[in-house]
Image (tube, rainbow, N blue to C red; front, top):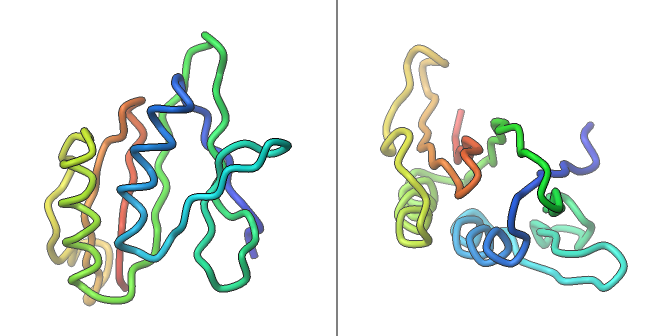
Length: 121
């Protein structure tokens, strides 16, 4: 089981605002801690799950991260929130039969080019 994920970003403040809006529809809440920085938790236990860390001028290597949603409406809200927050569409909400018969997902590129997904399977 994965304990947490760290995502390196070029601008911590910009990314914190972006992810706060993007992840709210799938149940993640932003936390700011002076020792850890900005992280997001799914509220189930309040533990750090997704942490953003500034690269301090170093290049950011884009990655792919997928968040499980509870239903199609959450996937749609995630996609809409990502676009409204300044993300770029990388796949509108819809079925992805090539990933599985019940796979439903949406994809957003964040400001650093990371491919962020909300999905059901």
